Length: 187
Image (cartoon, rainbow, N blue to C red):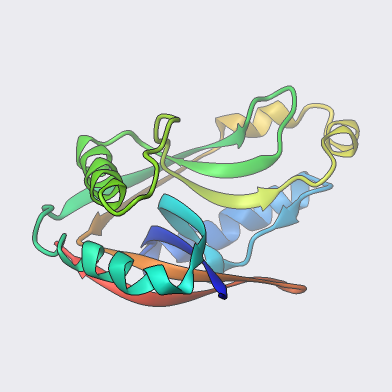
């Protein structure tokens, strides 16, 4: 039985993408040893489902379709640059999303409903973010970017409306991940 790699996410609006492009370019010019993400992969992950049996796809779609109209539109705000998991051993460079009760509620709604069909609830607390780059070798990154922590003060101010989330298929390819929308769920 074949598996399919899935995640649920919010898209960034066009104005946001237009602001992030030069912002990421500035980071690119100042940070070495980072594999930068492409703009067609930018999103805010709400839940990563991982490798799922193909036979589960219809059940997942049906469960998510049941959420149509069960959340209200809301506004999200992009914030500052940060790194995961911590500043001493960074692996991911990302753009933070300001905390939002509406976003938290949407994540919990999705998590609770997918739990009913067998997906484990997320153990870690949710932190909305947009991945801008991945660090393959932390040691090389730290050697090449001795004072990189200065970039953690950079902010990108952008607000955008959210009234839909998507179920995506992720295919890992040599040239990078390829994402395909399988379903959109509107508020």
